[in-house]
Image (cartoon, rainbow, N blue to C red; front, side, top):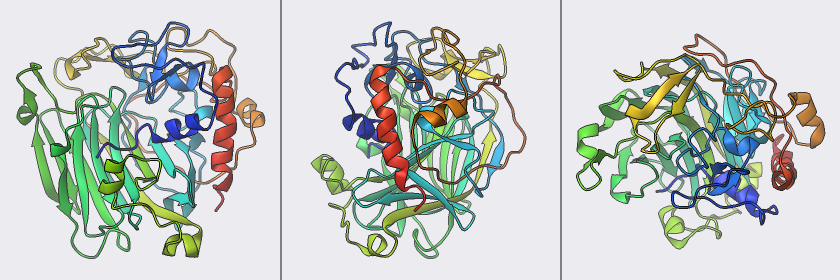
Amino acid sequence: MRPVATLFLAALAAATVQATAPTCSADDKCPEDYPCCYSGMCGVGTYCLGGCNPLDSYSLDSCAPEPICKNQTYTFTNMDNAILYDHYLGNATEYDWVYSGYPKIQNDSLWLTMPNGTTGSLFALNHYIWYGKISASIKSSRTKGVITGFILMSDDEDEIDYEWVGYNLTSVQTNFYFQGIENYTNEVTAAVSDGDTFDDWHTYTIDWKPETLEWQIDGVTMRTLTRNSTYNATAGRYQYPQTPSRLEMSLWPGGSEAEGLGTIEWAGGLIDWNSTDIEEYGYFYAQYKNITIECYPAPAGTIDDGDVSYVYTSDSGLSSTIELSGNSTVLNNLEDTGLNMTAGSKVTASDSSSDSSSGSSSSSGSSSSSSGSSKSAAASHGQWAVQGSLVAAVAAVVALSSL
């Protein structure tokens, strides 16, 4: 199923005044004054950071460079290393995670929650992964219509998925996409033994290499995809996930009345907002802990001009055109873009916090070794006019984060 990569911005945008924001696609790229394409809309600042699609933007360098992969194991005891997504300026050395919705910390694990009638939560890693081994212990949510996600998503919409549909607690769906091309025959369901996915911790692993991709559960390989098997003779290319990707963990309402009929059917039907978890806790929830990232070396022949960031050099969006760079990933403020990352005055996170009354929640990661670094800069908020109303919407969205 097409996952949740753009769900949260799209949902928030729907609650704000976006009439003046240009739209974008591969055939209709962004204008120079709003050069960054994110979730089908053009903008600056936040739109130019994680999730900015360079292939649909004004130019390849409209999006800020992507922070390079970092070997690390994350445990969750507080939210010190996470920041509300629209306060983030690209400094992945200061904040490992961005989030929207209602994340919280409980029992030394990250809980993504979805209160009654909301669009849920998203927690995304700021350090991109360009081939690597990614593992986490996860307890999915439950109830028809409720979807739990553990996904690798690239800026040009290459994708590798684990998704749990809440009516089925004995299996998980595995899937992949190339540049957002929807091919539902790529979906394969993998059985989860020894208990169920809601009550019992299981370790889910994505082992992603240039030639092979494996989905593993509790150390057992459940599915293998080879690059060669994805060759499309008509297009003359391998339609295999191959560009730097962010880890995204999510809880979202596939069974919302706002979704299309196909999505609702796939999710098991409309959500029962009066089900057990809503009655007992006030929200649906999924739990994550012990997230480990092992970065693999860049593919042979990759141009290596630094250890700070990844950059796109061709609108083909293929692995062979990605380069390692020394370019900074940090904007001075959220009116800047990849075209000029220091055009405006530098601002700080405290400036951002004073601009909106957002609720605080809890989570974080514990650091280990790093394979790359980015320039130090403060994260904050300073949004263009249309996004100004988006900040207010985000503040409302996180108001329940202390649940």
